[in-house]
Image (cartoon, helix red, strand yellow):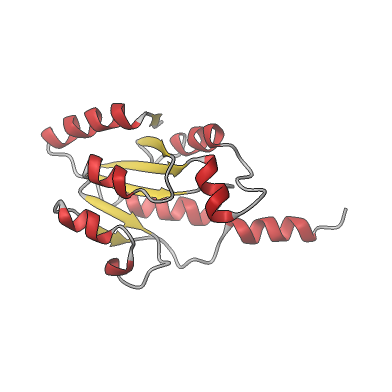
Length: 159
């Protein structure tokens, strides 16, 4: 089972892992109602490294990016659920809308993003990762699942 750490705690742990020669993979997202697409993304991200860090958008960030009524699940619960998933070693919550600063600080070997992008160069944080010598990988299944779709299906259920 993974652990939820602060960014400071995680930076120390990543330093230890790198000194041990471990390859660190990094994935990020909102993960606001876990679904199979999330699990497939995290499994594929974990395959990119020896250790998987998942950076989780805080509640205010999700609200700004996804709109009113989101997140459905509060950040502490989302973090606990993610940490319990087999592919996940560490979870860290970040409050910004982008994990760029966290990536620059932690310097994981590979930043894993889902298939929303056609090429690694289209990932917004690509240049940040490239600047410190890291790689960007596109992983996971086609984006056939989404929290927004699940919310829409629930809203259409008869009462």
